[in-house]
Each structure stands twice: as structure tokens, then as C-alpha cells.
Amino acid sequence: MKYLVLLVIVFAGIWWIRQQRRPDTPQQKTSGPQIMVACAHCGTHIPENEAIHGAQGVYCSQAHRDSHEG
Ligand SMILES: [Zn+2]
Image (cartoon, rainbow, N blue to C red; front, side, top):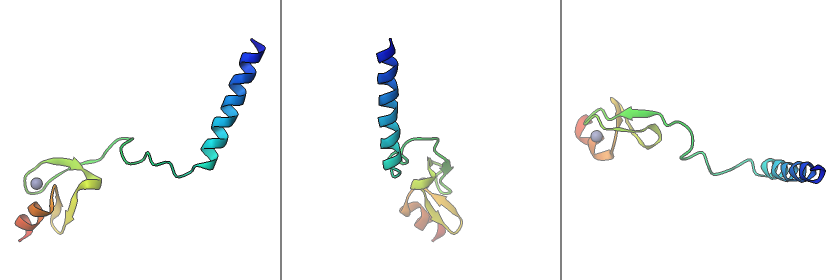
């Protein structure tokens, strides 16, 4: 039992050191809650980071921005 606790501490230490060495983990793209916005042209909901920003709102695609804003 003593060795098991020691092993856990060692693994926790290794994990902690690895976390410290990699501040730029590429996990931010899909993890976490997404902010959804509605297309001003067709009303389709898309993630805010994928939305096309126009002068009159956000759009699901470049084509909808062009046809809505002229
Ligand atoms: Zn649209």
C-alpha cells in the first residue's frame, strides 16, 4: 500500500511537469461551450468562431453575407 501511494505521487509529479512544459495545448478548438449565433440571412445557427461577420450581423457563409448585404 505504501508503494502504491508513492507510485501515485510520482505519476502525479510527472503529469504536473508535463503540464508545465506544454502551455500551448491544441485543445481549445473543440472543447468547452461554443457560442452559437444565428445567420442574419437564413437563421441557421453556427459556432461564433465559424461565423462570417458582416456590417449588418453575422452569417453562416460568405454567400449569405453577399446576398443579404448586397
Ligand atoms: Zn445563412
